[in-house]
Length: 268
Image (cartoon, rainbow, N blue to C red; front, side):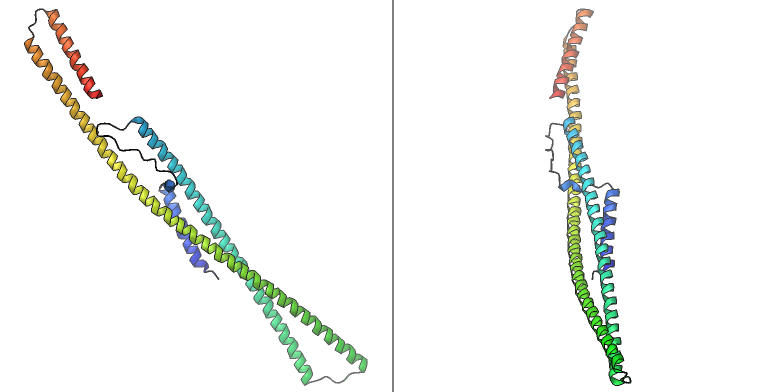
């Protein structure tokens, strides 16, 4: 007979773990989706908006798959728990009925045996021939009915024994299925931990790369500004302004050329 308290303890622990995972919004079904991991950035390129949108959509789909897997696992555990309790209740009821009928049958046999022994030990006074014959026939009829009832009870006992055996086999099957679900749940948690660690490491690596790209861009901008300033100052010193118009035109051309060079370097 299955230990109900042990089974209930296992199922309660599993349900509490699943509820905690759902409450913390942890992705469980990431192992079902194919790993669409984007390549690392090149040393001179920043992550594009399309890459960020792709990552966002992938994360949303994986989160939805995780929620579906958790709900399906909770339904399976609930169904197994109900089925296990129902089978145990049926087995207990069948066994109690069988024990009651066996006790009643043993009591009736004991009473009949005691009556026969008393009749053999202390025979009643011999009545008249017709009364004795009728009484003997009544006793024989009652004995035959008792034997038929005993046979019926034995057949019913055999039937109950077969039903109890079937119920015990079903309980064993349910227990094995429950253990399988536990193994699957443990595998899911292990894969969840592994996936979470990989995602955290990858996120930190991306953050470092983005910060390095920002620093590189800032350095390039400073270099471009320095080059533009260095090119503007010598030309301004060498050029002798003939008129205000000529000086203004040369200054405008110099600024435009420096701005174009700056934009070209930034685009590169």
